[in-house]
Length: 107
Length: 120
Image (cartoon, rainbow over all chains, first blue to last red; front, side):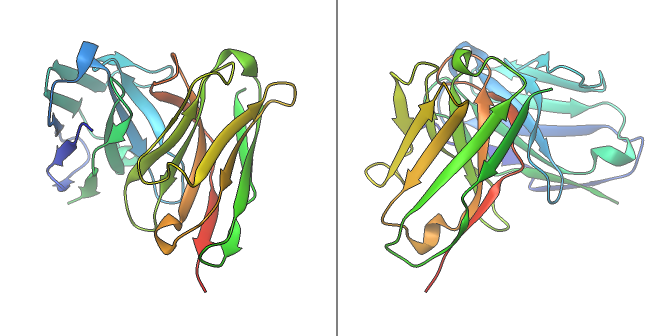
């Protein structure tokens, strides 16, 4: 099983700030099969990024993904009020696994 | 629009059983894998099981293998999750999610979830 470790656990930022979230895998994620999701309280997760860097339909371009191998990053270039949420990475190169999440909170 | 609506959750005693359903609409159901993902209260996401578009390929997380059974009815646009021998640690919101590409995939659409509580 591929273990995904997300850091930091919590990020305290202000609207307009840049957010950088990390996802590290315990072994190589084949073909960059890495996705990112956003989840707000009481809601289902929402797909943001797949294939490490491809934005899902309707996702604003302030969200970007990068990385390969074992190290992946989600960047939110300028935080909007609606971006404060929990973010999860997921690998799907083998049986799917999720990271523990990063909470982006308001400073 | 793609819609996934789960049902069948509730309170069950340890050792009991439940069957979850998911009503899918707005897409060609028989062309996509379907999945169950759960989230324990206040915790992160955990993949539970996947079934291919035809139902020929099925995968389970180690934590549920031998106790849970995934299936699908392409005529009625529904995947199911039969959960037996339930334990307290199975308490979670269970989400039905569409697999975007292939059997083992990322999940592009999610239902709102159904809560399963295992308690005496």
